[in-house]
Length: 483
Image (cartoon, rainbow, N blue to C red; front, side, top):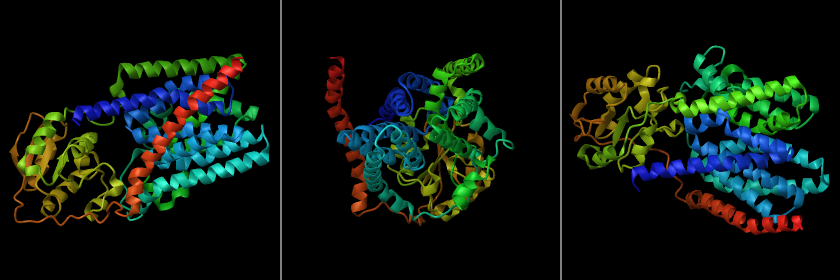
């Protein structure tokens, strides 16, 4: 598959899940509120700043897919509690497994509180004993399915060790760090900073969906990161390694049924005026972003990689190992389309090299973005003969290209050639050295390795098949209803 084909596939999947997301929000909201309020909630979703930030700003595609699958899953969970239909229960279990496979943290944090809200909500309208039996059955089935999918990953993850903390804006206080306030409040909530307090206050006075309210408030506080002590209390030493911006996204999603109900049922003139103002502002900021999409960019603009990858794969100095500097989030694209290895990457948790684990910087390719990153990169390049390999490539279009070149040159590397107008290749005499870098962490090569590869796809296909099977039944029920 060519690089452009990969990009087109990614774009297709992104827009596909964005397209079905309002339906997922509608079905989720329908559990807690009426049809009109659910429609309002799904419409509000389209204009949420948090969704734009998650998908187009941070590029958290896996987390977004997991979130959408989870919303569909809890909708089927609720339907099973009401009707006891096996198909709803089966599909809910499969979708939970798919959500866990996409991004395991999303269901781990969201699912328990949402399911508690659903169980309490359904118990008001049905036989409590029957609801409890069905809920227990579903919880056990969902837990088993999720464990089948995620256990091999957890088994692998258990070999990783705590690293020196890497600075992240979501761990800062919004009162002390302008970047934290900018992203965690302005870009995450936007006009919702006016709207959410009104909706939450309305929810308290009407005693409606209190569990959702508590869940939303919890995620809102967690989403403020280091502004409060709550993350440190919950996670202990690990709090300084995790990131918290996604909690803000979850807070806005959980709040949508409350917002929809507030929009439809609020009666006083002042509430209607304020809610209308907030809605208009949401729409205006959305169209403003459509006009200036780069306003959410947190990384350098991408460069065309087709020619670079073609030349890079053919270059004799880069056939075994390489380090790419100045490519930002395009680093994984290089890794995907080259056969050479690299010690660098964007998932810092998986690093095994002791020097990198204690460095306090993220990827070496973006080391100049971190405090002290220039010194870390230079130290790394000086000792590179024992762990790096044969070449360094520098993105010449990066604003830091000149500084990367200076550091590379000072570390004893020589510019071999400029492969294209976009990159230069640097080498070092390493023929007398052998790489001592060996990862101590391997993918499971037992039955767990096969489960890791097969189980997610099996649950995905089962979800699709159960959805297709359910279509004739839905049409039949609607037809009988009209008669």
